[in-house]
Length: 339
Image (cartoon, rainbow, N blue to C red; front, side, top):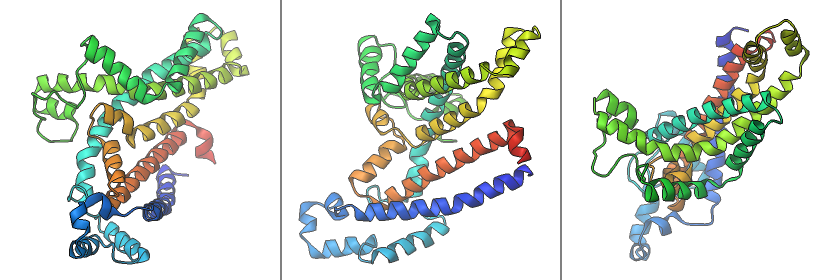
């Protein structure tokens, strides 16, 4: 099957998934036993029937739930995600403002997890039952088991408060202004503008939250890589490659790792999708203005348009990442191309 037909089929399958996500998010949002007026209007305003009626009419809360959903879908087809009750801005503009910060943090975290996790997993499998294997497994167990909020607090206390090796929360120091907007990524925008002081400051602020977010992904990637490599290293074709006199490095990288990479690609795609959807606790502790904090604020204020828009974006991220993983499978595994 040509790759463009393979991608087209996956895209067509994703459309009903996204529509289903909008329906599920709408039902759950409206099933919450709470009133958005209580979360967004003051006590004095709630006691005024005119203000309450105007509020319900403005946000469509006076309509039946099926009508609200149909109106939302009609607006969605025109690229309109609605107006946020909390910020009084279009939800699309809010997501465009918050999502780049999450992408920047998630990308730096997954790169760190990829380098450390895959490397540690391969070394652990090759040196099975050696001290280096036990160390790698112990570190991966800590990364998987340690609570993210606990690691974030510990890192801030040690490296920021006590040692002063890393900057504090936020994307930049208070004394610095954000760089000119090109992409929304402070590192890229400051580099494009030639503001290298801002660039290195933004990189410094990425270090601690990236380490915290990468801890869990690193542990999972290490364990999956080790398991996949151990399974491949026990195969006959690996023993045959060694019996031919090939160098151990060629055996590991060419014959073993190339056949163990499919489950590794899967776990990397899932980990990156999870990071892109926003880490609420990490972004809150490090005062990182990402989509995780935006979703948390929308949930606590019963901001239905923001909740719906965020749910759709999160679902879209997972659909796109699964599509990319499927395409990588298609390119890496000839059995899928022949199927």
